[in-house]
Length: 430
Image (tube, rainbow, N blue to C red; front, side, top):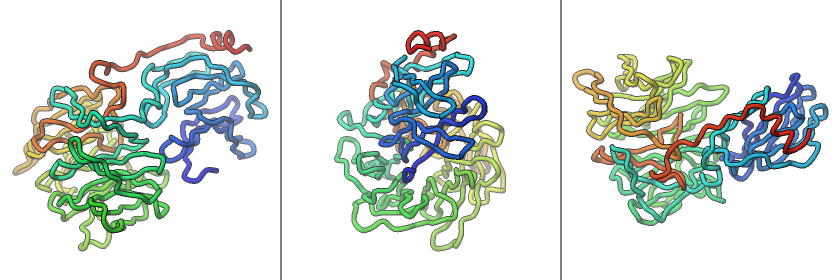
């Protein structure tokens, strides 16, 4: 079994014989394989490589999608759980997202559904852009592209002159510093493990990031100029997936969990004062994407407590003192305006929203105004904020993939094929 490998995208075989699944490395880039788990023996075995996801077809084939969006079929021995012939191409052009998950489904009855669009190959070249309140996008540095890998991770420095960004390269996941707008790019971390989701200290002198260099995702800090070693900042019993300092530098707010053993929760700690973190939003539901207001009096976050993700605000640090729901039709990724008079978030339709808020003497929500739709091809995340806002609150720093410019931003076409098994038989035989 591969070190730091992840099993995902399971698909059951008829009669409970086994389960197909995808095995990939931390970013689903250098390793991407199709495996089968024999439910009788408990043994897992490799079927083929360079596969994003596989399904069993009643025609006696495995149908699978590659990272480049190509669809293939290969004969499969259901009794032996083994491939039984050569693969044949059957379709192409399936949309594959940045996590190398194909927008493709095959029903047991033979109906196929897919979305046509950019492939995982194109998704290795991303570009940072400024997006105005009307949705107009302008490249920050037209000559710079990068591979964001499978996890969102970029944040502007407090003075908005630098960008700390997680980049996937042949060396693995590392944090880099990009001088804005068209300045140089320099590598900050060199450990060789996953270094992700950077953040800045309030003075802009150091960068925090999470890393599994010790076996679990812990929080580290390193000077932004690259001098000196990385310092372990916080090590908990559960993995830490994101962290941010309060604007006054007093509190460190972290989001933990996200494993089978631990729910996603939001905790807070005052380094040098507290010995253990205190729960800020920690329930049986999933609480993610914490954001503190500029005056450090309010905590915004997203939770699925209603059955779908919505944005909430609580007083800080006494989060038991009240709770207000800000979004009304789905919401995630909240971020306060620097003015403190607006709270931005992405609604359930994938649109950027600016909610007018009053924070003194108490909290209330006014108009919720849709600013622009987040177009197809822009990097997105359900668990982590995928945008920053400029100091004047008029532009959003976002990331889009190559080939997803404003002139070609429409979502891909939804394609439905009925009786796909008949088409499959014609192409590959019975």
